[in-house]
Image (cartoon, rainbow, N blue to C red; front, side, top):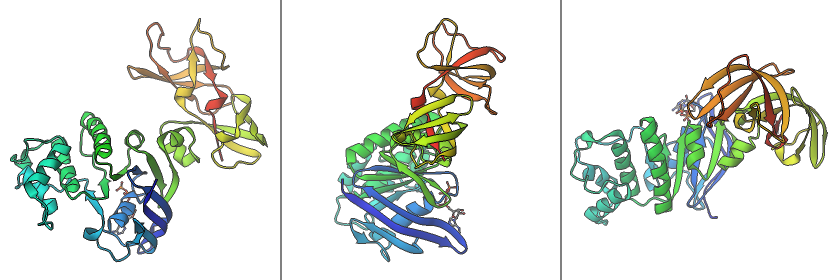
Length: 358
Ligand code: ATP
């Protein structure tokens, strides 16, 4: 893997406001990389410092080994697709796409536009008026315009947020395909965790100007490094725990579940003996219905809340020794009833699904 973008000790201040704090980051060539985090965490600022629309207060931004300090956005090997798409409504689709080439008289416009439109699935749309396009089509035009210059890096700032759910899901798949096809690095800014999980090779989760965790989707989901990441990515039950000993394995007592032994890998950050928190995902728990067998450990509970989603039912189950009911995600299968509030039940759990957090 070749490093394409390197950030070292990057800080950004807006007056008194510290928007980026000591960011160290390497993004590789050909990677689909996402910056994910809640509103105001600094992800757009970080993207704009890579693009050259913002200067850094301190630290290094390098692309292909070259320090980008003082190099304006238009001379960087990056191109940005904005949230608003910035499409000119009075121009045709082809004219909008060709706008990306305005400073490149050396490139054959006609062929380049046709190639770019083909890349985003808009063959035959060149003469259409841009104002008459759907949201998804405008998105494609914006992508074609950014790709026509064959940048090393495509920067995407919440590119799908204006689309409805169906269209967004379709464009997610298309963007992944497009990235594989063109092979350039994509950096996506999103506050939508599902979008980041689906699309990215790696994700940096940001909070308050810092990177909370940088990992692939599965690691972020299965082994969140701290409670903040665990809460932001998917749903998680948190149980109080008391760590008795730490060696190759960790022995602990978990509220409601009792004594447990887990692998050291299940503690993404070093833990000591004493008070800790255990996270457990709703889909790793299951309700055992009458007549069903399991080899997993069981705990008795009472159904507190039922939320039916069609394919899934989410249960809140109250268990002795835990303040908050456990949230459990069950796939709805034929022959399995949906329980009612107040029903007594048994919950199966697996120690391998626990993650130990500070
Ligand atoms: P969102 O998803 O809401 O766009 P974000 O994570 O992209 O959030 P940024 O746009 O990077 O967040 O902003 C980070 C913080 O820096 C915010 O608190 C914002 O108000 C502040 N900020 C951004 N740009 C400026 C600016 N030009 N001047 C002052 N403060 C700014």
